[in-house]
Structure formats: C-alpha cells, structure tokens
Image 1 (cartoon, protein in one colour):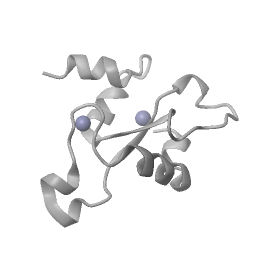
Image 2 (cartoon, rainbow, N blue to C red; image 1 turned 135 degrees about the vertical axis):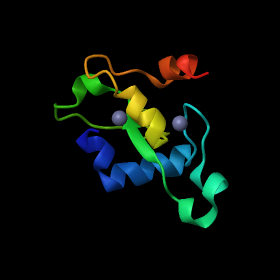
Image 3 (cartoon, rainbow, N blue to C red; image 1 turned 180 degrees about the vertical axis):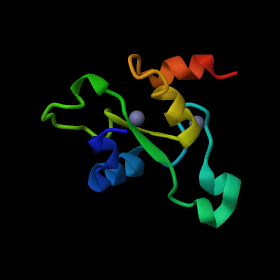
Length: 92
Ligand SMILES: [Zn+2]
Ligand SMILES: [Zn+2]
C-alpha cells in the first residue's frame, strides 16, 4: 500500500464519496459481518505512477474502496499493478 492509502483524512474523504463496498467484487463488510464490519474496507490509490512524488491526491478520482482480497490481487504483481477494471474482468 502507498502512503496515500494510509492517510486517514484522504481515506475518510474517499469513503464518504465512494462508500464502503469493494469496487471490484462488491463485497461489503457491514452486510456480510454485521456491526463488527462497519467502516472496514481498504482504500486503493489508482495512480501508482505518482506514488513517490509530491502530488495532490483527489480522493474522489484517485482513491477507491477495495476489500483486502481484491487489494492484494491488485498489488500481487509488483511490476504491474492492476486497475480495478482489469481485476474485475479477471474475477470469476
Ligand atoms: Zn473485493
Ligand atoms: Zn493499493
């Protein structure tokens, strides 16, 4: 994960906009687990090219909610970070 994904302010802004449902597989922790899952989701930064630069991050377009499983798959190949769309197509 990148530091943008860990920034609590950006994370909160992204989640207020996108909600808490995985954008790849549609998993929602509150729906699946009840109260204990409330507010739980990973946030993925969609523009890894700029991970190391001082870039202004737009939480609406640059950060997306994904469940930990999908998030791991997105980053599985370190040399080729997948997009949400690419992983969605691979999901069976
Ligand atoms: Zn997912
Ligand atoms: Zn990520």
